[in-house]
Every structure is written in structure tokens, then in C-alpha cells.
Amino acid sequence: MIIEPTDAIIRVTAACVCGSDLWPYRGVEKLDGPAPMGHEYVGIVEEVGSQVTTIKPGQFVVGSFWASDNTCEICASGYQSGCVHRVLMGTIGTQAERARIPLADGTLVATPTMPDADLIPSLLAASDVLGTGWFAAVAAQTGPGKTVAVVGDGAVGLCAVLAARQLGAERIIAMSRHAPRQELARAFGATDIVTERGDEGVAAIKELTAGLGAHSVVEAVGTQESMTQALRSTRPGGHVGFVGVSHDVSLPGDELFMSLVHLHGGPAPVRQYLPKLIELICDRTIDPGKVFDLTLPLDQAAEGYRAMDERRAVKVLLTP
Ligand SMILES: [Zn+2]
Image (cartoon, rainbow, N blue to C red):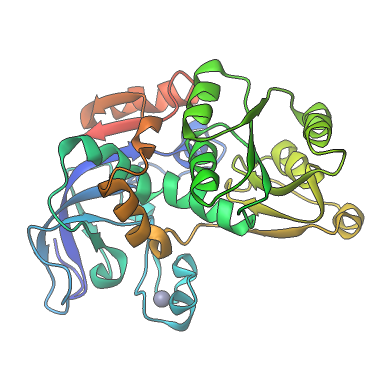
């Protein structure tokens, strides 16, 4: 139902379970009773409010997990996830048949034509995991001549590998101990795999980089261990892009001071990258939809949560 004149209503074509949905699922984040879930979505516009001018009924659209006006000073600088009018989509819930999208003109990006069915998983990936992995790779200053290490082999980490490849990184080290995820990392462009974690993982990265550490490190988990591993795997002057939702992470000031490392991260401004990502997907340059290894009908969403929690699935796609 339209509430604000800037809203759109979409019929959700596909949604999914996010790694961050697992924090409340596991009880690490407390909820006060039933809550709407889901913040990743693609769909077809059914209705728009009276002030919506660019988005039209019938369009296939992709949006991100923050609704944003895309016009304020923060949006204009490319940080739509910090928009002064932002609305967190998870508070509305997109693991549903229909969803209300606030600030539709700013939030949604329409595909040029109705996409083929086989592109839908990739477009859904753009809504969060790809956009987040892309931001992490950009925040880590990935580019030609750079060695990039990725901490975390979930969907975001794997998409960061894909992004690093597209951004022209010379060497991409995926840190993973799960064979199917290693295989996907290689398919997305990883040149090396490191299976060690913690101090041993840091030592392995140093060994691969002449003792210096990586130029660019992506942190895509959000735990103390992964953040410490990322910081220590980065060479002086290097960059960490951190996008794992932080849970009780603290960094010692003296270590941070001595590291000479740039840290940049947070909730990804996915909206900034959507037009580019949609183009790369629609012309079939990239296929991030491969991160979905389980598809379930929406009414079996609970099994999707279980499968991801038990790491039986990388990422679960939900269809209405
Ligand atoms: Zn804004």
C-alpha cells in the first residue's frame, strides 16, 4: 500500500536470505517479537505514488537495502547508505510477495528491458551482496598492479573477488577452507587460495607478498578475528575495505597507530554502483548469481535460514 507520495509498490520477483539476517536468527541480535525480514529484492513495479516521476508501473527494478533520495549532499557524494532521508529496507521486509519501496525515484534502478529469467539471480545479487562486495573492493583501493586479499568466503567475499577482477587487480587471494567456495572464488577470478586463519592466515598472506602484506584487503565477516586478520594482512600504506556487519569488534589504538593502514567501510552505498552493475549483468560480462546455490519457495524461508546458518548453502534465493 502506498503510504508516502514518493513510494512505489513492487511485486517481488525474487528475494533472498542475507548473512546479516542470521545474526537475529541466531539470537545474537535480540528482536522484540516477530519482525519483517529481508532487504534484498528485485521486482516489477505495480503502482507508484503521486510524486514519483522516473519509475513507472511495469518496469523491472533493482534496489538496495537502504532506500535513499539520491539527491541530498551525502547521496551526491556517492554515499547513499548515509542519505539524510534513508530508510532501512529490512524494517519493511522484502521476503514477501509485495514490498513498499520508499523514495522510489532515488532508490530504484530500472533495467533497460525486461531481463531474461536466467539473469534474475545476478540482478538480485546486485541488490546487496555484489554491491557490497564491490564497495569493499573499491574501499580497499583495488586496481591494476594490486594484490588483494579477501577475508570471508560468504557471498559478499566471493562477490568482492569478482569485483577485484573487474577492477583489474593483478593478484587476488581468497581466504577459504571450503572446497565449493574455493572453486567459486576461482571462477570469479581468485588467483590464490589461503586456507589458514588468524595468525597463520596472516603469515600465509605475508609469504605470498614478499613479507609485506597485501595492498588491498577486504573484510567481509564482521568478527574480531576477521577484522584483526584483515588489518594484519595489509601492508603499511595499504587499504582495508570492511563490510562485514561489525559484532563486538574493537581495535587496539596502538596497533592501529603503528599499522599505517587506511580503514574504510560500513554499510555499502550499493545504489552508487547499481547502474554499472546492471549493465555488466545484462551484457553478461559478470555472473554473480552463481552465489545462489539453493532456491526455495518463500513459504520455506525458514529452511533457507537453517541451510545458511549451518553453512550448507552459500546463499538462498526465495521465490514467491
Ligand atoms: Zn540522500
